[in-house]
Image 1 (cartoon, rainbow, N blue to C red):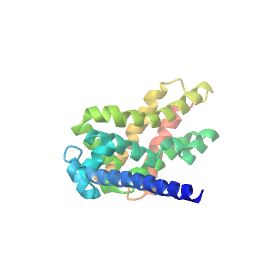
Image 2: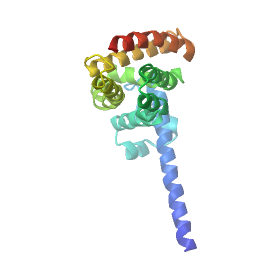
Image 3: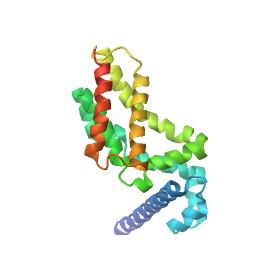
Image 4: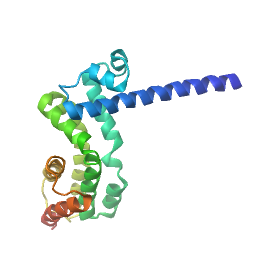
Length: 214
C-alpha cells in the first residue's frame, strides 16, 4: 500500500510540474506578445524566454495560434468577470449604479495593474495583426461580460425599473466607453489611480443609469 501511494505521489508531482511549465510558457508568451505583437513573436522567441524547447511548446499547444488561444483562456481565467463577488453582490442587491461601477473597478484592476503587459495590448495587436484570431477567440469570450450586463438590464426592464431599450446595445456601448477610458490610462495616463479613474467613470455611469430609469 505504501508503495502505491509513493507512485501516486510521484505522478502527482510530475503532473503539477507539467501544469506549472504550461503556465510559465503562457506567461512568457504574454510578455512577448504584449511587447512585440503577435506577428512579431515566434515560437522560438517564446521557447527561449521560457527556457524550454520549441518542440515542447508544439507538444503543449500545437502551433502559435494554439498558444494564442490558450493565452486568451489563461487571461480570462485569471480575472473572470462572471465570478467577481462584487459584481455578483450588486446584481443580487439590484444596485444599478453598483453593478456598473463594479464592472469599472474590475476592469481597472486587471487591465492596468501591469501597464506594459496589459491584456489590452494583446487585444490591440490581435485586432490589427490577426483579426480572424481576435474574432474567433477573444471576442467570443469578451461577450460573456456583455451578456452578464445585458441580462441584468433585461431583468430591470422586465421589472419596470428601466425603459424598454435594447439591452445588448446598452451593454456593448457601456463596455466600449469603459475600454476607451482604459486605453487612455494605458497610453496617455490621465487618472493615475483608481480613485481618479472611478470619478471619471462615475459621471458616465450616472448618465447611463439615469437615462435608463423609468
